[in-house]
Structures are given as structure tokens and as C-alpha cells.
Length: 124
Image (cartoon, rainbow, N blue to C red; front, side, top):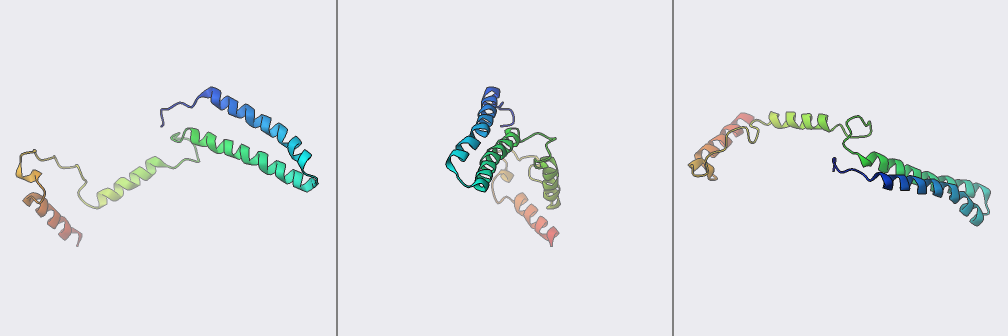
């Protein structure tokens, strides 16, 4: 997702049609509504909603930019996750994997049972 480019001509066409919508909406609303305050409210809400949607889409266009203040701090979240993972004790994958034919490779081996029992005693 981070490496997929967004088509630039598509973005330009959206911008052009958005401004065209903003220019023609007041004429359509004024032709159909008689109440003057309602004209203002409907024009503001319709055009504002589409421009807001365009801004949200612009932020979502590149979600992995490290300098965008609206994005999640993914690196800090990952570091926090790693710290909590290490605090549990043994990190999965930190020990070398046993050979496929060795007795430790099967489930319930003495090594696995011993490690589980010792880690349970450590937590108590």
C-alpha cells in the first residue's frame, strides 16, 4: 500500500470537479429554496462536506508518511509493543529452532515442558 502511487490525473480531475461543484451548488440551491437562511446553511454544508471529504482523502492518500501530524506514531507503538513483549520473558524465535528429526521438535518434549514449567515458576 505504501508503495502504490496514486494517479496524478485522477487527483487533478477530482480537484476540478470539486471546484465545479462548489461553483454550481449555490445556483442550484438558490433556485430550489425560498428561505434565505436555509440557502446559506445548505450551501455551506454541501460544499463544506465535499471539501472536508477531499481533505480526509488527501490525508489517507499516503498513510505512512512519517512527518504527517495526523498519522499514528507507528514506530513508538511498535517500540512499546516490543518492550511489553520482552517483559513477558522469553521472546519467540530467540532460541535456535531444533532440527526436524530431533526429539525436541515434537510437541510435549521434555525441553518444552521444562521450559514452560520454569517460566511459570518465574512468574509466580
